[in-house]
Each structure stands twice: as C-alpha cells, then as structure tokens.
Length: 113
Image (cartoon, rainbow, N blue to C red; front, side):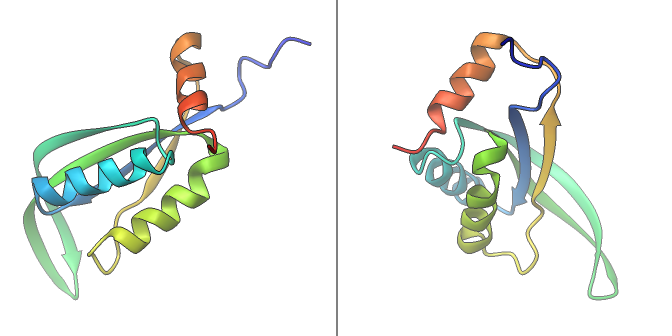
C-alpha cells in the first residue's frame, strides 16, 4: 500500500525566548532528547504584544523545531517545563509537502531510542 502523500508526517513547532543562550539551550535539549530532528534559531526578532494590560515590545529569538505528530506532546511538555516564560508561545504547523528524504530523516531522528 502506498502512503498517503497528503498525510501530515512532520510538524514545525515555533517558540520564542529572550536570549540567544536560552534559545540554544531549548534547541539542544529538544534535539538531544530526540523530540525534534533539528531546530533553527533566528534572531533577533521584535515582538509586540499585550501582557498584563500593557503593550510590550521586546527582542526575542525564534526557534523552529522539526518533529513528528507522534512526538509533539512530548516536545510541548519539554518546552513548557524548560521555558522560563509564564506563557511560552508554542505553535505547531503541519508540513503538508516536503522532500521525501527530508521527511523520512525527521521521522528517523525523532524515533524513540
């Protein structure tokens, strides 16, 4: 049976933090635990948001993780526990198309040891 090419096999998961060191620690921790195949850090980005009734502006570092739907819950739990924000941004987006070899690599790298 041929796999469904429209089935979601990979997710990208986005979070942000307030320093390069924290971003790298979150990325390394997730990859080391096999919760993500890789993580890319982009920075700085300027975030504008409402927090506790006030409009805030802050420089942040974005981390984009590549994982599978099966590993998402564990990745979310890891990020929630490791993050120092009260309410960390954790957003998952399905990858609807991608290179077959890359998608297979993500799946292999996030398989439980």
